[in-house]
Amino acid sequence: MSKALQITFLGTGTSQGIPIIGSDHPVCLSKNPKDRRLRVSVLLSWDDYNFVIDCGPDFRQQMLSNKVHKLDGILFTHEHADHTAGIDDIRPFVFRQGAMPIYAHERVVAALKRRFYYIFPENGKKYPGAPSVQINLIENDAPFQIGNEKVIPIEAMHGDLKVLGFRIKDFTYLTDVNSVTVDEMDKIKGCKVLVVNALRKESHHSHFNLQEALNFVEQVQPETAYFTHISHMLGFHDEVEKGLPENVYLAYDNLVITV
Image 1 (cartoon, helix red, strand yellow):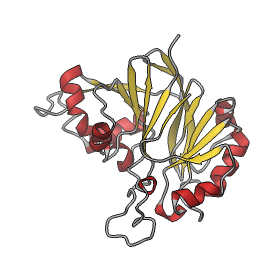
Image 2 (image 1 turned 135 degrees about the vertical axis):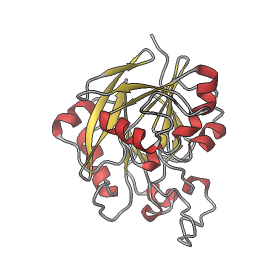
Image 3 (image 1 turned 30 degrees about the horizontal axis):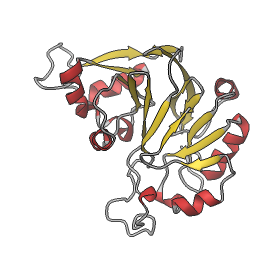
Image 4 (image 1 turned 90 degrees about the horizontal axis):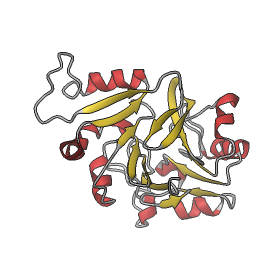
C-alpha cells in the first residue's frame, strides 16, 4: 500500500505571476511572501515517486527552491505557455534519468511539437543537448497509471478550450477552469482535497472568479479546498482568506499538504 500523497504548491499565480513586471498595484508591492506567486504548478510525491502537474516558465526556479532531485513525469492540463514553457528545463533530469515521461491530450502534444520542434523533431533527429521525452497520450479521458497510482482525468472548459484536471486518490486538481459538467463533477465527489482556480473577484471569460469557485466547492463538497491560479486582483492573501469558509483556503507558493 502506497504512502500518503504529499502535494507541494510550486506556484499559485496567474499567467503573469505576482508581482507583475512594472506594476505598482498594492498586492504586487506586498512584503508578504504569500502574495508573491510563481506560475501555477504542483508537485505530487508518494513512496519514491515525484510527478508535477504542468511545467511553466518558473519550473527551474521551482525545482531548485524545493530541492527536487528526481522527477518521474509531467502531467499537462493544457498547452498555454504558463503551463508548458519550462519544458526545456527538464534537461538535468533527463541527462541523469533518461527520457522524461509526459502525459497529455493529443492536441496538447501537437502544440508542444510546434513550439518545441527541436525536442520533437519530425525527422527523428533531435537537436544535440535537447531533452528527450516519452509521450503518453491521454485518450478519451480514460484513467491511466503513473507510478503505482491511478489517475482519473477530469474534463473541464477554459473558455472554449478543453482542459484536463486530475484526480489521484483523494486529491483533485483543476486549474484554468470556468465550467465543469455534472458528469465530470461526479468524478470529483468524495475526494478529501480539491484544488481549483479562483482568479479574482470580478467575472472572467475563462476562469472561475472567487464566488464561482466557492459555488463549485459547495457543489462538489470536498472536506477541504484550496484556491490557486490567483491574480493580484483577488487582493491580499491574508485579507481574502479571512472571508473564506472554514474549510476553504488560499494556496500559496511552497505550501505543503498531505492527503
